[in-house]
Image (cartoon, rainbow, N blue to C red; front, side, top):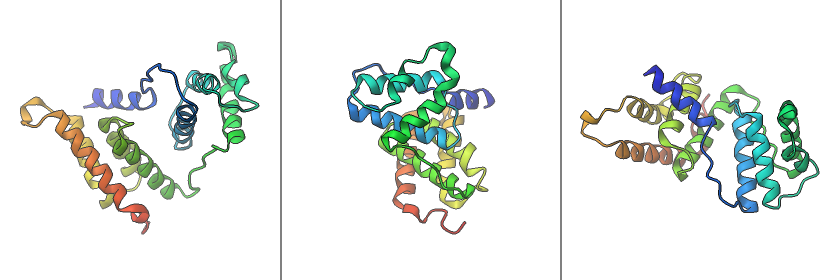
Length: 190
């Protein structure tokens, strides 16, 4: 299980990005996504920040600092996080999670569940993050129990179970939708 967990954790922050021509909206969405990843404490490498800046620049996004971010050389990578934040601020995309750590964890759970529900995050990866990085810190609340169960099932899945991995993935998507359907009341008692 440990080897699978390491793979799952790595793949969240290194999601493969297909190289297609991005629209301006796609590029802005990518910037928003990375902003939230970073705000919720996920590691995003400088190379990915620079690449997102380049994608946005090519897609026609305009910001005073965007060209500087997109043009950073490998030796200048340490400057990328500060420039990325500057670009986010210039575009009005800066995201700050709630100051209260528990509220921030609940916000992270909602954000990840939303990605699972719309298909932009692999259910195994997303439920694993909710299990390991959210539910654990919140003391495994009842609201996250189904998503944690899905994470455990996907993490331990074996062909001999008589259920396909696709079915388990679909269960995770449905669990994410149900969690989101409960609205912001999840965790309100914390």
